[in-house]
Image (cartoon, rainbow, N blue to C red; front, side, top):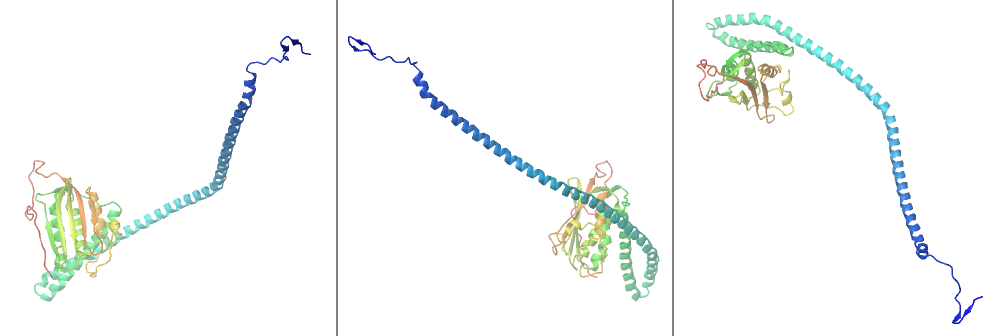
Length: 354
């Protein structure tokens, strides 16, 4: 029962309330909501990470299973590869043995062919002595002489091919005027050039060029190039030989306007027994040995040989690179310049027709 006062009824008593109680009760729902939101985000992140890990695990598991399936296949393939390697080695050894036997046979054949050639050559010399009194024999003598010379060359090429395949070609080095080898090659090829009415232009250097090498072998290499050019150049065609210095090398270039070389054949042209399409005339013949010998002789002199042709029917250019040697003048000696070599560029033309 409330007591009355003079001013009226007394106010009802109230419980004591802390000053921040109302604020705290209002703040609690907002904090809880924020906490719940953080928990949800964290839970989503965790679930996402777990899903990614699961996907990675599944991918790794699939790879592992594929690897387990691949291992036997790789083992089987490796075994087949090993067997193939051994088989290839056996085939290579067999091929090398056959090639060695082939070269030995060629050497024996060339040696046996030499024996009957000598009496044929001697008999032809005797015919030549008699031919002056019997004009009809002169023609026969000339035919025999040309054909015997061709046969001798083929036999020599066979011998050299067998030596080259067994690395038995040797050279005797001395300081050689390069033009001597060029002139020797021209003398060897002159009869064929004359017979076919081909024109030869020879451009020599202004000063003599020297190389350390074997004059006979260098002459052989250059004559092979010249005869090859004549062989694949039509009658009355043009062949040129140019000798020049470039840097530390002497370069001998033999070019022609003949049959040319197909692009697919050029990388193989210096391999033994490689030949392009036969020319219409078959008088020259050949075994596909000459260019292989050119490369081998150039290599023995520390040089190289290259070929260039724009293609079939567009002629060809063969270039022999040989290291230059000091001239005798540079070494304090006397310069040797053969009398048949004029200084400066000297064209020589053969426009004869048999």
